Length: 78
Image (cartoon, rainbow, N blue to C red; front, side):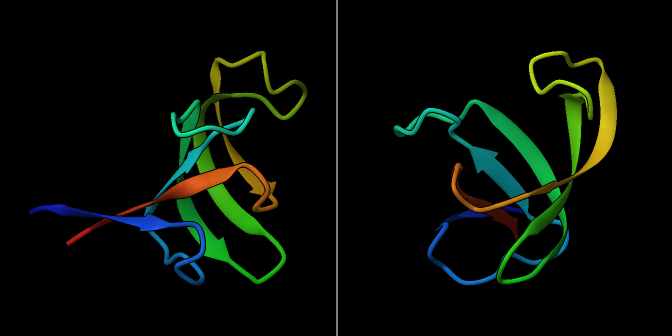
């Protein structure tokens, strides 16, 4: 298998794609999640080393709902 890099402007991501976040902008990811579903307004993911109470306090695997502001891009496994 191989992977394809897609920018955040590539349309709605599909279930199973990796989403890479850059919290402070830039070209280097700070965090990664797995897309569970996506709408035009929100991205629904499964994320590791996170917490619903505090983004800086990891240690859990959680479902998260995020907007697209900090999305750097996606990795599609083909």
